Length: 284
Image (cartoon, rainbow, N blue to C red):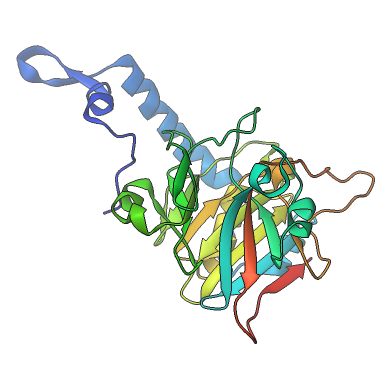
């Protein structure tokens, strides 16, 4: 049994159907169309978004339409994470990852979650225990948060509520899958050309992968199979998907024909924690 969608209120549930004669439930036109859409999707999705049964590897993605990867692995206990805003860090509403990295002593900077045209968050944002923006339904069911030790975790919003006081920073994102159950998938003909930034958590640590020329379906399966992630979520993608490290590696290239990195308002910083700690970054 998985946690209910935060928006599944009694009122919304009642709107799906009504009662006919003698209290017999009847389908409304909206419910009928929704059912028809789900049936159509169940028929078409496996054909256009299937995933190989074999173990998905970096090479699998690299050979798939020349996809490129930027992988960051963070073993538990060897990193500290911090969610920040461009406004707090450099005094501007929007910035690029390289600018934020230069302004801090972090080892890696990746883009944050979704946002509106004015730079305001598209959902919950908590910085240093202060709620900067409230949770918004239909803007993603997942909450990526840090505790007092800087460790990251990703949970449903209704799972986050009881542990809210433990969170130092938090940001609302799309939760794609948890414990083998899939909660969010999308497919469009142009989706493969858009970069994706997925973050997952497994028993050994955290992994963040920026994919070029892929889609949520393939990316989510890669995170689960190649890294055994128990939970996977999506940070902002498209031109916003970006990461840069102190070692000089970056997920984007300033070259003709390359998608230019978009300036964004929120970021996730990663710091090496303690002598001998390891933060591995691979650019492919």
